Image 1 (cartoon, helix red, strand yellow):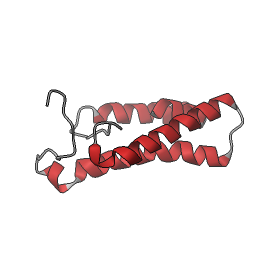
Image 2: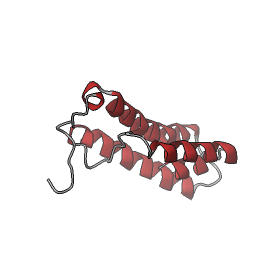
Image 3: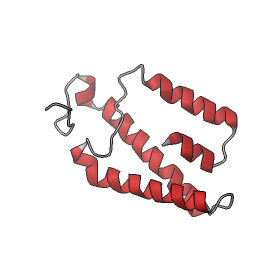
Image 4: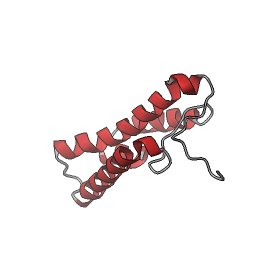
Length: 109
């Protein structure tokens, strides 16, 4: 989600590289990434935000290189929601205690 967003926002190569490295480093931590279909509690909102982001990507790609400010804000808001939700889930009390939240679906269960 981050690379198309940064590309369409025409960010600098250094910012894009820094964002990719920072997100890659989170793979070495216990960061809880949000998958739109696996977190039942937030599924309606997360799926809606993901669909909105996808529509913005398609719209902005179609109109390259001209983008409206509203499209830019919506494009940026969607990944920020996903990252914010992941941060909230990572830093929540149950996650800190090592308790698996009941709204998480695990493969094989």
